[in-house]
Amino acid sequence: MKATIEPGFSEMKDRALSEKLTQLTREFPIAFIFYYPRQETSSAHVLIIPLEGKHARLIESRKWIRNKGDKNKPLLHVISLGKMAFEYRAGNPFIACYCQKSAIIYQSPQAGDCPDTEWHSVKKKFKKYTERYYHDRELLLSEATHFQQMGSLTGTHLTYLSAFKHTIRYLETLYAGHSFDSSNLHRRIKYLSYFIPAIEKGFVKKNSNEYYLVSELERGKEAAEYGDEVRLNENLFDSIAATEFKLYQFVSDRFSALKRQIKSGGHLQAIVSKPKFSPEGKELARLITLLQKMHPVEEVYLFHQSQHDRTTTYFLLVIGEGLGTAILNRVQQSVKAKTGGQHAVVLIGHSLTWIQTNLFYHQAFFQKIMLPVNRKFQSHPNHPSIHWEIPYTPNYPDLEYYYSSSIKMAKQYFVLRTNATENNTEGLSNLFGQSVLGLFRTYIFAKLSYLPNYLPAYSLWKLCVYAEARLEKVEFLFEKCCGESFFKTVDKANKFHHRISSLAEEKLLVMDEILNLLLEELETACKSVKGESIRDVLLRSDTPAPQEE
Image 1 (cartoon, rainbow, N blue to C red):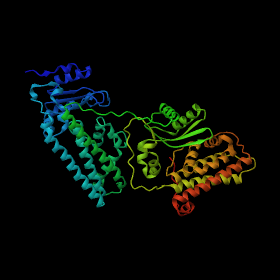
Image 2: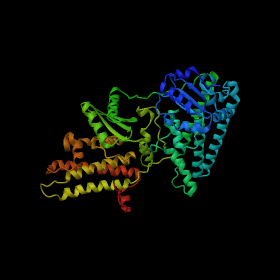
Image 3: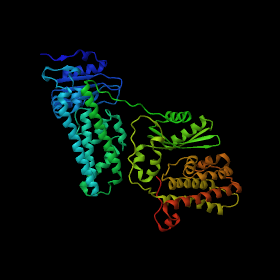
Image 4: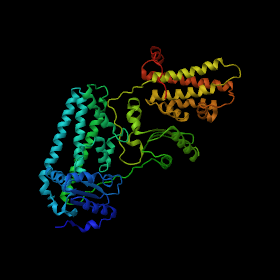
């Protein structure tokens, strides 16, 4: 008896896929091929069922099977006949939903009959399957809670890791038909993202191959082996529990969806989210569009907006890769030029990975900014949220040393100012500019718990005013010193210019006043976070300031 090929096999719209499937039936003993065509809100699905497990592994290793990056291509599943029968008996609803007789486009005579997928035939199996998942999950979470109450960080990490693996395994069987236990958890989550794009919202990437939260849980293995819990972070337990609950919701939702689909006998309908782009106002929309054209970004947060004379300034946190100071400067200059000075932007740019790994320094700042209400652009709707540390107290590491560096630079200015020979102002502009930038940057750190990159003087000053609005009154001194070019003058002072310096005494007096005022403000800001004069802290410490790379 010959194998049968249903008419639908040759009538598939994807001719290339049809030819590849035909070739597979010639190379391997295939039991079934099931096909569900693409619908308006869901991808096409193709299930290839080889007679033997060894052939399933060979087929699954082929590049055109593994490549799931194109959302317009069918999702391909490879399950051996024995595994299909096992999952069916276990009650996995994926089999009952996607291995229906009406979807067969190829069947071998050696395959036997297709299992009965009517709801009355799988109802009891399905119930036991779901109950087994919920029961085992509850046991793992109870154990994790017990370890946490006992103060065992290692036990808590390892038990949560087991809970993650438990739920990931069920998600694999519910979306792909079988689990991938031999692969590491990072790869398994990445693989699931092809079926569940929203799963990416739960995991910040550590790098291109790993997820931050999973890596933190896996540190429990090292702690168990070496008996050292110093690298385990208990402040992440709330984020770990929240992420585990999101995974649990994916399983529960999938159970419900497959149950409905089995009862209806139709094809599963998946809702595909569309990219979100909801900036407030046409001008902000245009600015974000300009930013996108100059450099790809993932998210944009508007965390402050100010109005000064005719200029509206937008304070934006930009999330993306490769957002160096040079790129942000070009964007700022382009915005100013294209809007005729009517709009300006203060840009802070970081990758999500950088923010996640630097929470010890900056969580208080970013947690206040990265709120859904402030998010004005997403390149796609499944960007992950930061895994915040709870509880968290701002630490201001190395603030004393940044303060020390700033006041020492300012002192050098005043030493040269006092001892300069007549008609010789060489070096004063450079020392003044570096002093101003150092004071700006340290003030921001003290007030906002955020140490910015080496941004332009304008951006640093705007962040100072954002931190303390009354500082805006100081700007009259900037105008008195250099007119409208104060910030350009400060930035230029940090570059070498081979020419004679000429500074009038009146201008030098204003520069003196600016530095003295900034030093006073910085002392007040640092004292407010350290609870005492930072000068006293420095007098007690002989540790040198940290070296900038």
